[in-house]
Length: 409
Image (cartoon, rainbow, N blue to C red; front, side, top):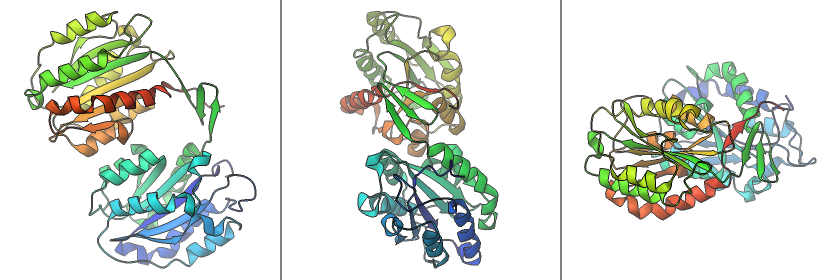
């Protein structure tokens, strides 16, 4: 259990739900069990501090992190037993996320983000949010807060997966009386997210994940070839050329591939098709619009993962090479994107998403490497306005490069 609680700051965000009043003590006990082994004395380095907040229309902080840093874990547990149900309606998860980001995870409240301590948020929700969560979700993820969400049958699963660090960090229970059944899952996720970050020269270790600075990249452009993009295809092509122009294309340098998708994905050229930037640019100039419907983004993501980033066609997944995926979407996917998106992220592929007003923002944020890797444009003619922002984001991502899971140490 001590290995589970490797010093993260925990903030417990309790949603308003009529069912909570009936099982309040059971809920507190379930949370208490997960914290009993934790030393919050603050006497031995970066220990685990706790904070609580409840929310409905407006969030309310009931215990900040700093209040208990001089005491053992019994004090926070006593405070939890004394919590009273806040009550209220409606369920404004977006406002609550913004609140904990600005107040519970602030240095003034005891947050130690700047010291490299993992910031973990556990969200319990019994209903879908009545306000917009997109901007607050982007805020917590850009801040570095890793969210674990637990929702009942009345909660919105996709909404909770969007809030969570990854879709697998969103857990479901029939009602709050079943919370003890997911306790071990929560502890496993806490252990996974609580591994400390260690810097070793050009390599950063985050638990079992090693992230190293690299100079070369495999770059795949996945372009919406459906009817949704027919009026902006030329602008997409020009934008792709602009990105290629900043790459160092070569056999031992950057490699480029282009794929179009609608109902199925079609390769225009693979990573090993061309070894010079001029050849790549010439090929892009001759690409014509594929057309078709529906827009099956999930299948397209699986296709590029299995057939375009593959070593047999020039991909370098086992070498020290960063792998980028740029996806352009002018509409909502006709199939599920969550599993394929999670798989790409697990494989270390950094995905940038570009969506127009007809694309689904939550879907795009789910696919992108982080919400900050998603760029909204009113239409494809506006792509040139974000070119510099994309370059800056690429430069920032270059600092970490390819992610490799090397197994337990």
